[in-house]
Length: 393
Ligand code: LCS
Image 1 (cartoon, protein in one colour):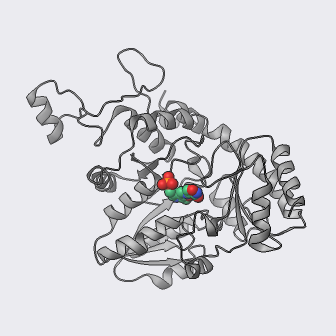
Image 2 (image 1 turned 135 degrees about the horizontal axis):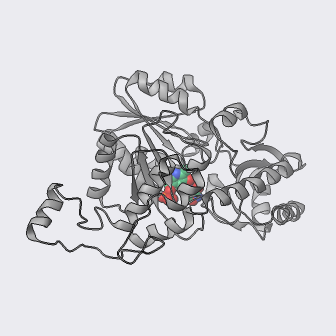
Image 3 (image 1 turned 90 degrees about the vertical axis):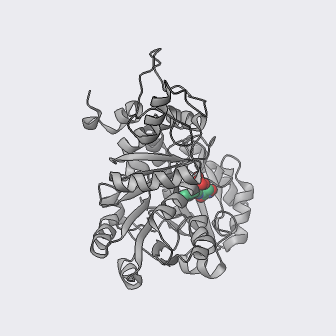
């Protein structure tokens, strides 16, 4: 069967499959650092590119390649580059696309370290960065400079749940010669396909929904075409932030159930959001599945479902939020997201603690914001857990 024409769930199971000498039904773990050459000439040919044999696991490995090709197929991209973490994916993309003197425009409410590494580290190499509310396209246009090279968006943004119009950004990027990079972690290719909407690069913290089981950290980058693919792979290999074969094996196992997990995460999140929206102790809620979300229509157009990340505020602000977090028992009080288990955390003091107060305020990461990642437990149990915890607030 030509997998190009297959449905999404079929690709989840079969894209990237390899045939080995034993007929393994799943992709084996090639837990090796290096690969035997058949001859001195074969070794030289592998290095020159005349042969596509494997050389060394930092460069490429069959288990990792299977995952890279699987995710590339899901994103409708050219090929994938797996990395040791989501941050390694982000840093490899910045390294590949930015030179000293260049300027990047990014979503203000981007995952904290994705902003921090630009402000604290890339700034030392004379890379300039502007952070704006990319949900407002005019704000992007205002900060474009002659040296702007990259438009980097995270949508929905972590943790404000602001949604950026990917197709509109792609148009601006084309007009101004920028590369459009989209962090698709919150949606996964099951709910949103940035490359189809005109992005040049899509990346993920694979730690989250794609792996889905809170047992590894990893990242992946998929490009639309070959030139960027080669540039970014070069950076990944030379920095040495490759994924490990065992890590890739676990992700290959996790990704097979992505669509069934996300369907259930989302079904539960819709119920949890409805509960929170009417709770008297909740002052506001941002969830793309609620008509009250400021970009509800855009979410409907751009995403095939609202996902399972919810941000909300409580009467009594952070103190009330702390009481809520200390009194849930089913929901795990922990950072990360997108797993089978429900998680609760406070971004201003946890995931985004490294972002300055001023930048947090500007990005809308308020002190009262609680972030909820809805798992695949029974919805009634998740809601009951919240209901009982609210009684202690
Ligand atoms: N992109 C997004 C949207 C993220 O949420 C994260 C991590 C990353 C990239 C970085 O990926 P990592 O290196 O951790 O695999 N977000 C986290 C969060 O919200 N809580 O803990 C980590």
